[in-house]
Length: 139
Image (cartoon, rainbow, N blue to C red; front, side, top):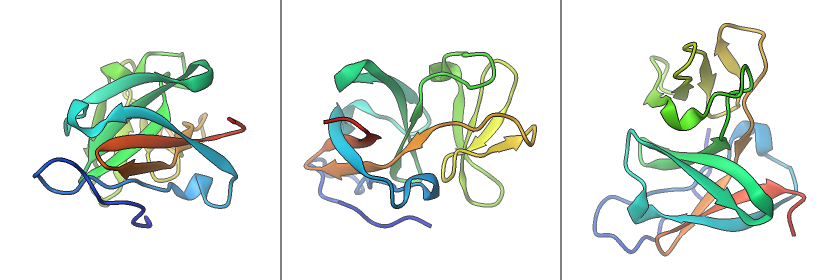
């Protein structure tokens, strides 16, 4: 499901790992610095703005940092007011705070309601306590 990318952190707690969502495998991306691990907390969603003005959101689920679009593809609701959790099937899920739409953070696919717009998800790396997000077309 995920490849272990980097697990070196400056904290004494459990290692926080990066992710490579299935939706991004094989894409050419440039990794840009976006946050420090110490600023992320399990169960919370942190909005970030990275180089080029890209707005993203980050969440730690089961010790892995997930990066995704900052706004719901349904009605552009800020996803910082959403919930991140492990779904019943063990996959990381995001639940939009406006209408309760559920997205799989492995793939970006909309789980409920089905066949709606999918969520953009991005690969992450964690090196020395810093989170990097892979963005397509950024130099």
